Image 1 (tube, rainbow, N blue to C red):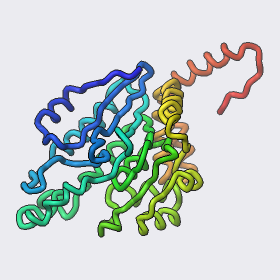
Image 2 (image 1 turned 180 degrees about the vertical axis):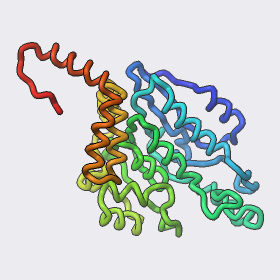
Image 3 (image 1 turned 60 degrees about the vertical axis):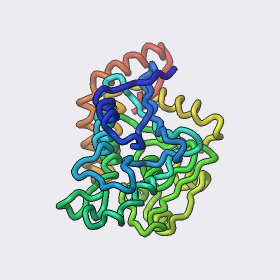
Image 4 (image 1 turned 135 degrees about the vertical axis):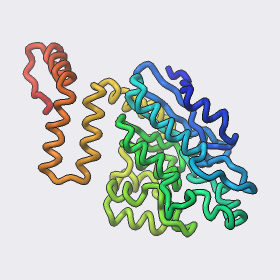
Length: 301
């Protein structure tokens, strides 16, 4: 059973933020699974800073930046949260960046060249910061992709550790179709999931990627009938949540780091990580031994 959760730091930001700004509904069950639902179904859960197109954007960090930063930090530091699941309300996971956010760019070009680059900087991570913060969340993340995931929505699915995909969903990196180089993490994320060849095909054509191809290439962990998606995703999340949290976090961290390490360094990191998790390891081994009784069993190492 999920109950809605409110973090005071987020509530303060939301109270001062534009009404149309993207927000998540945050729910938590008694197993430590946090369910975050993008809650703009009327806009297919598109990401928006919420500022009217006919008015200048504020300089400095927007409320959107502050909200996403606070959100990821609250999840990271909340000792009750063991696994984070992302999904979308309604029929879409996320349609990506809300095109309305771009509509006023030319009108205010003299004052604000781009709403996504801060004054004095050549470039800025801006909307990609959410994905950077999620990559460093420490806790495991699952994308429960219930429908189309486009642009930033596909990037959100990509930055998660596991993708549970509805058979009615699809992915699309449509940046190039809008004259934009993918700038919210796709260049790094997608090729590490499916290899450079497929990443090039998907990102430079902007073609849709349907569930069968996503599964075949290893991008999707599981493709599931739409009516069973929630149940099977929660089964996966609660399975992970039932394992020692420090062990899971250390393993996740070591895997991410190993993507850019040599083999020997990766092995070394695993041994070092085990120093931080030895108490959980000892307890887990004792409990497994008790449950097996006299039956012989491998250690599982």
